[in-house]
Amino acid sequence: MSKVIAMSGKGGVGKTTVSALVMRYFVNHQNDPLLAIDADPNSNLGETLGLNIEKTVGDIRENFMKDPQGVPSGMDKILYLEMLMNQVLIEHKSFDLLVMGRQEGQGCYCMVNNILNRFAEELEGNYKYLLVDNEAGMEHLSRRTSGKVDILLMVTDYALRGLRAVGRINEMLGDLKLSVKHKGLIVNRAPQNLSKAFLDEVESIGVPILCTIPDDKNLLEFDMERRSLLELEDDSPAVIAIDKMMEKLKEVIG
Image (cartoon, rainbow, N blue to C red; front, side):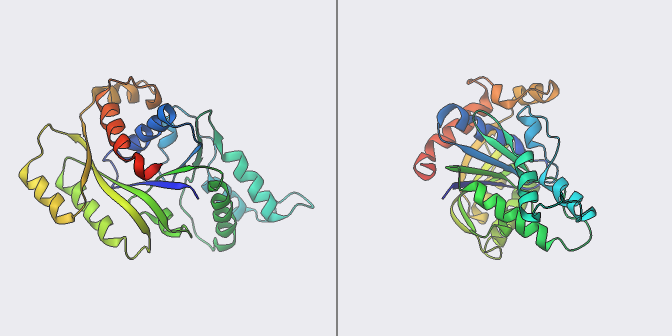
């Protein structure tokens, strides 16, 4: 089975940036196949990787619901949806990316969701590593039938609001019936020294800090220039921080 690395945290804390930096680590340090799933409806992961996202799984679902009879004559619905899923899978030389896209509209999506979820699960079996960039509520992970997460990386910025969102996510893990082997906190845009109030909040949540990422001007420059974070230099402060963390997690990711 794939080793699952999942991201969580409220919007705006840099969760997708961290996902891209973790992918950069895999591109440069791991030779095994990686599948990334952008499960955030904002669908920004592709942009941070310099990829053009034309269609998403959500587009397939919505188009099928609008015209369920639009299946080519003589073709099975399941095979048709699986064919469309293969078309939205973005293949890169070092990884593949599946973008979930828009959330469900009105109507019953049970049948089409079952087919799409089954395809995604079969697809995951072809990769040693699976990285999931989640929405804040982690609904995508809660729908995973395996319910297994090897590493849950909870991302916050240097603010109590983001940290408390991590606390709420940590509390609801039991309700989601997820089996999380390891979990840790990543503090993005962190100062050199974290305040006592911040550290006290971390202690009350009970999730250890795995990594602090300093404010890195390269990230803003790359975003403004629409450049892929995969192209960041090795001496970029954010790259150094994430690479050190991933090296420490080697025993977990294999």
